[in-house]
Image (cartoon, rainbow, N blue to C red; front, side, top):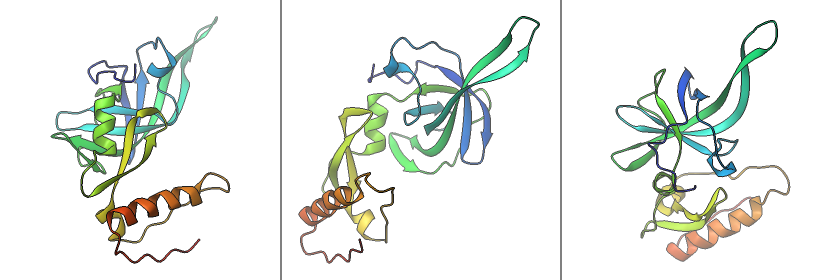
Length: 182
């Protein structure tokens, strides 16, 4: 289910390279919601943090072949995007995973930590595509204190996304000056 607990391990780390990790998937999935697929989030439990990874590839790797068949293992490749330490999410990873660390799909509780909670500095800009029960928030002050860009292919909704973000920024900070190039 979407509220899956982090202690239900579905795999273990078998490789770490820079900002990526590979997890061997050892558990079977009873529903599509349980399965690690491209675009979903997995957590890697380390002694110091819960590292958040975005699944970018799921595949089978051949381990070897006998005369009658090949043996395969299922793996998920993850982009490491951040970590949860003491109940707070931060981008980037300071404590990298090691071989054998446990992996699990992120539960609703962890996704809420990653995507923020409403506050005076945060505005809701939508809901998470993977789980519409989770509101996605942005930190207004953090966003407007630096330059940023919204990029994507034609027709993916960049202009609509920018309109929503600008509306939320102006609701929160009505006296703010904005320079927009579209």
